[in-house]
Length: 228
Length: 228
DNA sequence: ACCTGAACACCGTTCAAGT
DNA sequence: ACCTGAACACCGTTCAAGT
Image 1: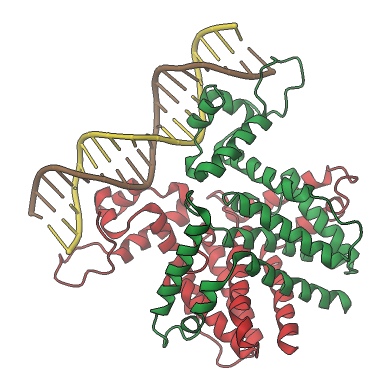
Image 2: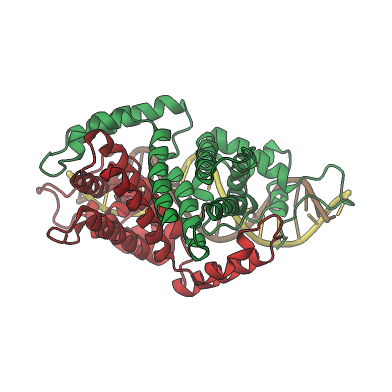
């Protein structure tokens, strides 16, 4: 069973594939066709090799998708940091950058593992932890609070950015919202007193604002405990 | 293409399968073998029918798993409510009940859709909304805050309760944590200043406490804005 | 109305053989 | 060290035919 390699350590063939190339091509297919559309046969065809070649660079489809998701996370984590805003502001900006990255690659969010193991997920948690420390939170609480924020970012992003069919993304989402709004409308108010009242909010809400609303609440809660 | 039916409206055969029976059997297989282990062939064998019969009650595997996940959510939402604790306490208890239900069926959490459409997910959001209203939060903010809490519960549960291999669950999880703790230990402190410091916390943490820590922060943040 | 079971069109993964 | 491509052991889903 071949191990997964990184880039060829020189000495191999010149035209050799690399894990990077394989993952890059996988991301392109994932974006275009979704998780089910990504196939080893198609990917091999795209890269002009056989399916077996891919297994030299990647041990399974699960690993491939996990690596692809970590790559997406990399876009967000690599973004420049403002020199020295408050820890709270920086946390806020970082979380939104990650959400936006996942939003552009709807298949990705569910595939970051918790606790993190891949490089960019690790980098994200580390950065969160560093910012949380700057917040003044006592050392014993930093781990739990940092992972809580990490989980919020990845978990809630995954929930909100449901894999939409690979068609016209925004139209699809609008139609979906309109449809479920109508569904809620028709529920029995006796059983669902709250939902039947706020269908208008559902119809008009924006996913990104939803994410930010929860984030603000979470960070406000954090601030409260940091001050105490 | 046959539509999905609920229970047979009488008049059909006496021995007829029902969607309930199919979903119930699916949950058993999901618990035992995980999402990949659930197969229409195996499920049909278990129910002593052909695979085609299943499609009379359920339109696809996706729908089947979604219905199964909603059923799991039903266990938590059906639990008795304390008569009249504070809204915050009730929210707290409800969230933990949902986490515990997902914890017993690790495949389930990723399959509740957002915004919710299936009955028990709707019930959960409605209950959250009703409690949030009791909190005194202004009406315009209730939708956003309630869904934020809903997303936290389902999204973070899904993150934390990663599908473990269907073997000895607790041992597996411990081994996984020990392994990633060692992984973190070996990282370069220059790149990961935070992570390399808190591997002890990782090794000793409990998933459920993690969930609760974040939940407490979120609810504290909510309280702050409700009071204002 | 509900079930049967064969058939279709795929999958991920392996592996002997090549270079 | 890295690639080829056929072969294995499956899948989800459909559908004509039955009761």
